[in-house]
Amino acid sequence: MDIWLDFVAKIVAALVWPLTTVIVVFALRKSITALVPKIEEFNLGSLRMKIKQEIAEAKELAKEVNAQLEGEALEKSHATDTVSAESARKRQLASLAPEAAILAQWTEVEYVLKQLAEQESLNPRSPLSKILEQLVRAEVVDIQSAKLFKTLRVVRNEVAHTPAERIGLDTYFALDYLRSADTLLESLRAVLGQGS
Image (tube, rainbow, N blue to C red; front, side):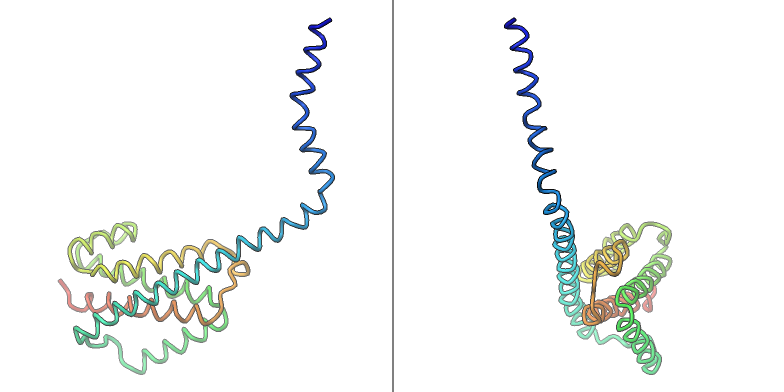
């Protein structure tokens, strides 16, 4: 008889915590259901904050790259009227769809980096990070521009892989991204214009 009592005691001991958990979850199901959207909002808030921090970092890196460009007194590669028309188009896109403006700007960065890879006899179909690494190693692209590239890429990836309504970027941050990317593009185009 002791065997049966021992057996029942072990079964009850094994089932107490799982049953308690089920009872508590069932009893608090309405509260838990109301809490889930708030947890999602918290996660989205931290994503927004991360993207905004990355854009702020890109802005600072762009200032450093821009200072290098001004120090070298590089010539602009485009006519002023073309640049201002293009800038106006980008600003308009940023005000209408900030995420789309970021993605469009990144496409231009990719294109120029691949052109630079071709110029330097690298495989333009290689991953961008590998192309950049090789260009930095060959001292074609400076370290600050590489850091700016990486920061802009992080933002682009977060924007590309998160639904726009969940990011909620405003025009201000999109414009900061565009300006930072323009600085990177100017730096890459300056090297592209020099040839090898």
